Image (tube, rainbow, N blue to C red; front, side, top):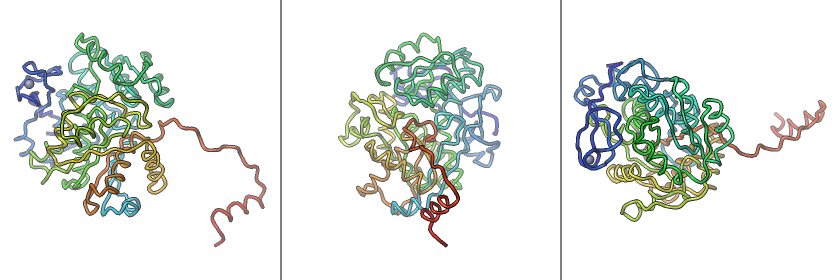
Amino acid sequence: MNTESLARHLACIDCGAVHALGYRLQCDKCRGLLELVYDLDRLRRDGPGGLRGAGLWRYAAVLPIADPAQRVTLGEGATPLLDCPRLARQLGVRRLTLKYEGPNPTGTVKDRSSATAVSAALQFGFAATSVVSSGNAGSSIAAYSARAGLRSLIFAYERTSAPKLLHMAATTPDLVIYRGVYDDLITLWDRLVEDRLFFDCGASRNAYKHEGKKTLAYEIAEQTGWAPPDVVVAPLAVGETFVAAARGFKEMHAAGWIPRVPRMVAAQAARANAVVRAFRAGGDITPLKIGYTVAEGLAAGDPGRKGAWALRLLRETGGVAGEAEDEEILAAQRTLARTEGIWAGPTGVAALAVLMRLLAERALDPAQDICVVVTETGLKTEAPPPERAGVAFDEASLRRLVVERLGRR
Ligand SMILES: [Zn+2]
């Protein structure tokens, strides 16, 4: 089963109507979102022992790209699941692992969904892709589109960090900076998707795109010997990473690959916490007007129908939704760098900040095995550099400094 995709059809998550595989973004009957459905009997029969190859396409059986020649890759996936004993001790947790997505080709988890989105664009005969981005998605889609020989029209947030902008400008000639936040442009852009001038690489509707991120769950399961952690904490903006990871665990459980589904925890920035509010109030999501948060990738005030889907999955798995203030996110970023040597960006580390708060509030059991998805490297973050005025040393002053810092033996 190493090369064959076992995708069979699309099903509506609201009314259950079944649709043939194709570029379709919503249900014909009720306009509900669609999810890809695979041949579970085959998955159960083959078992994980049939997996071959490395990286994201190792899981090609549960991805929707039929022709191996159209599976675009820059070497994404196969990221480490890092055991973090020092940080676990500091937080009073029995076992803490981090699924660290920084080693992906453009430094973020987005490369997983870019791989399947751009491959699907090829599969359905498109010549161009487009996305509205706060930074990471644009940077990743531009790189994967270039890799596939497709044009990419990238709309980037005006406060996008300089390293991300540099990367986008390097990989696509069609970079447009937009004013305002993601929510301001996405509704307009979404209407143009129907014109089919570009392949929809947005986070809100395309089932083929988020499917790549499902491999996060498959990797976590495989890296734990098919006995996944009790709790998985994942960030939630529009809901793409969260929904994809939750779907992956559900699918593996249905195929008998794992004994149970982890409890899912959704992590939001307190400045963009529409799902957390709805979770607490017990009702539907009310869109928020939001401003800036250091967790750029979580800056969405209206998570739309994908957010509603995430909320449903959260309730189904007995999950929790939590939030963290910008200051807590920046503190978690420093702690992670100093205790485990992992330099992640604010968006990437938000889930850890949320875990810290939930533990402090006793909303999670520290005796459980907890995994946090850290979605991006810190190397694409823009921040003022530390003091860099140089010191002129002679031997004596150099010795004095070393002794002062590290002490005498
Ligand atoms: Zn429907």
